[in-house]
Each structure stands twice: as structure tokens, then as C-alpha cells.
Amino acid sequence: MTSNFWFQRFFYFIFSLLLVVWLIVPQNPLKQTIPTPDFLFCLTLAIIFRRPNVLPIVLIGLVFLSTDILFNRPIGLWTAIVLVTTEFARTQFWRYNDANFITTWLFVSLLIVISTFTHMIVLNIFLISQAEFWHYLIWAMLTILIYPIMFCISFLIVGFDRKNYYGKFVGTSE
Amino acid sequence: MVRNTNDEVNNASRVRRVLLVIFVVFCLILFLLWRIDNSRAENIRLAILDKVVPNVSFLISPFTVLQNIFLDFRSYSEIFEINQDLTKEIQKLKHWQEQAIQWEAKYAQLLDLNNVKLNPKLSYFTGMVLADSGSGFRQNILINVGSKDGIKNGWATTDGLGLVGRITGVGKETSLVMLLTDTSSKVAVSIQPSGEKAIVQGDNTRFPKLELIEKGDLIKAGDRVFTSGDGLVFPRGLLIGSVVRDSNGVKRVNLAADYKRLTFLKVMRMVSVESIIESDALVGEGSIQEKEIFDDE
Image (cartoon, rainbow over all chains, first blue to last red; front, side):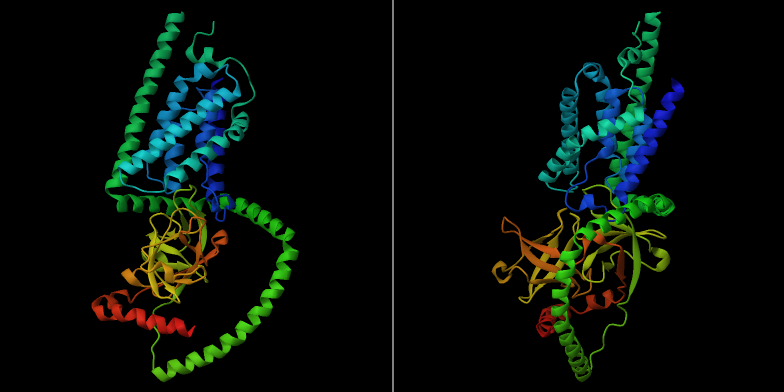
């Protein structure tokens, strides 16, 4: 079980590395017309809703901190928001363990919207204007729309197993 | 037994919570430091990029190859139309080429008559694009020339045709170029043929806005936008693009540089910036001279 976890963590790390590299490839046609959605945030949320105990805080923190540096974002802010959001998602996991996909998706959308606008508001408080309101709106919507794709990809990382993991997570499975 | 595991779980979650708080506070401190001492933080970021990106370029290359195959495939499907368009264009261009040759001769003659000395220090380096910024909120790219090649902050970069942006950070072997589409990018321009001054302000779209225009009615769609050299950031007379109007009637610039395919960038060496500062009179006369030069064009 534990070695399995390490494999899944390793896959998550490799996959995020590939995603980041793909995003910084010059002439990426995606970026020309639309703001790039945050694939990694979506993927992390998708994994957390399927296996809340796979991704440790330190791994998420390091991955997002390095993307902050690579993507020329304000260093640290988005990482902090993502950490708090994912931790909150972890505590809410039990509600959505048996829920269907659409319900989870709605909840994820809410999380994405809240974290996006927290990001925007904090940046505005610190007088760092990066984009207009509608830009953030489109960005949040795109991130919500790619959630199903990232949900499918999360199967690659944490497998198809549909056991009740809530019991194991909280330790009351008997 | 159950109690026992519960305690363990509680302990584990307590450890996790402490870890979370530590990590979040650490991130927020990083953010504050970044905000307070922005230039130093950006230098550190650039030093990291300088170390990392050239080393992972072997990872980037398969993606680039795939991307190119995809782009090539797309262009194959359009090849017939492109061919026809090109034939038409060649016809037009031949005419212009003829004109240009004549004008070049005439220009040289006039320069000779006026005894004008061209600025010999405006030379350039060519760099290759290493990486884009991965997020939609910053518009910058990393190129593979840096302080080793003598690049300095603030120099203009073009793709050979139009202005692309300016150097905002220099590492040893890489440097960061802020594109004109970035929200922090503001460039003083003059719009020809009317000679109106304005500022090109990026807003994360492909078409940056034209702002602070004095007499808007003098500007028509299709007018050409050049750097004005005001503010001494860019040399004067670099082509930026042409004026377009969006559906709300806001004037924007259609960039001349091909932002879709930025591969090679020219970094313009600027040395003689200081000499202009001394004489205020020169700035005042600038617009008149400029007008004459561009009228000639």
C-alpha cells in the first residue's frame, strides 16, 4: 500500500513536470487566444477528491511554488491559496465520496471560483494589476471546463480502484 | 482499538495541519518579500530560470518537434489558398521592390547631400526563444542570450519586422523579454501619418490598447504605429504595427511582429541613450524631423 502511494506521488510529480514543460514550450498555440487554464490545480483537486491521502502538502506546495517561479507569477501567493483550497477539499472529501461526478464538479467549480477571486482580490489589495476582471472570469471558467479531462487523467495516476477509501482515510473502516 | 486508531489519525491530521500552516505562512512571507523587494526577487527568479531552463531544454525539444509537426500539418491543408495568395502578393511586392530600390538610391543621395551621420551604435544580437511564460497573466518569453553576450536591461527586441518587447531581466545565459501584450508594458508611440503621440498599453490580448491619444479623430484604422523614442526607453522609429478598432470602437494595435511564431529575436543594442538626455531642445524638434522622414516614406 505504502509503495503504491509513492508510485502515485512519483507519477503525479512526473506528470506535472511534463505539463509544465508543455506549457512553457515556445509557440504554444493555446496561449495565443485564450488565457491558459490551470491544468495542475484541476488535476490536484481531481486526485484529492478520489484519493485524499495520496498527495502530501509538501509535494503540492513544492510543485506549485516551482510553477510560480517558472510562470512568472507573484511568488508564493497562488501556492498558498492552492494549499488552503486543497486542504479544505480534503476535509470535505467525506461528503463527496459517494456523490456522482456532477455534484463533485459543481463543488470543484465553487472552489476554483473562490480561489481565483481570492487571488485577484489579494493582488488588487497589493496594487499588482495583472489583468482585468473578465480575464479572471474566463480563466476560472476554462479551468472549470477542463476539470473532466483532468478527472480522466487522474485515473492514470491513482488507478481505477473504486473502493471506499473514506474508511481507510479516517481509520474507522471496520 | 478503534479509539487508538482515531488518536493516531488525529495526531496525523494535527501534524498535517501544523505543516500546512507553516507552508502557507512561508508562501505568504515569500509573496510579501516579492512585493516589497520586487527587483531583487525577480533577479533571484531569473537566476533560477537561468539555471533550470537551459538544462531542461532536452525535455522541451520533443514537445517543440510535435508542435512543429502539428503546425506544419495545419499549414499543409491551407497550402493551396496560401499559394494563390502568395502569387498575388508577389505581384504587388515586385512593384514595391522596384519602388524601394529607387527610393533607396534617392535616399542615399539625399543623405549624402545633407551629410547625415547614421547612428553606428545601433546594432543587434540575435537570440532564440527558449520558453514562454506558462500562465495567461504574464506575457513574457525567455531567450538564450544573456549578460554573457552583453545584454542589458531595457533593450528593445524585434522579430526582424516589428517590435516584440523589451528586456526586463538578464541572467547569465538567458534573459527575459516582456512582450508588448503584458499588462505592465507601456510604450510611447507616434502614429503616422498624423504624427499623433499615444501609449501602447498591453492588456493580455493579442491587440494592445492605444491610450492617451490627444486628437483621436486624426487617427484612422490602418495608420502605422512606430515607437516615438519618448521616455528614452526605445530607439525612435521602430515599427510596432497598425491601428485597428475593436467592436467597442477602442483603438488597438495590430502588432507587426508575428507573435504566433516567435523563434528568433533581435535584441537592439542601445548605447547612446544618455547623450539625448542632455539637450531638451532635441526632444522638441524630434516630432518635426520625424514627420519629414515618414512623409518621405
